[in-house]
Length: 113
Ligand SMILES: [Zn+2]
Image (cartoon, rainbow, N blue to C red; front, side, top):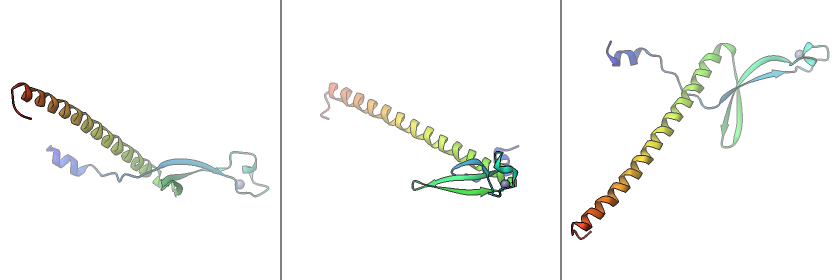
């Protein structure tokens, strides 16, 4: 099967920032079992930091897998960008060293550089 065809058939995961947090809630009713247990739940929230402020968004149980996939996808993309940047920095360093070597060689060869 051609590569292009495969790429078209793989569903695209929308990257999502943040992370998932499970929370247990105490409802406050005096006769509820949650007073003496962990509470109701777990309920899941996606926590996102925007300009230093944390926001949380409730995630329904049937959306949990999709949201987790989105969060993983974003982390994968960020790791990829970091790797590309690392390689670019290394290439730049190598290029500068080569440029210096070329400069020295040209001076040795009598060029006015
Ligand atoms: Zn309760």
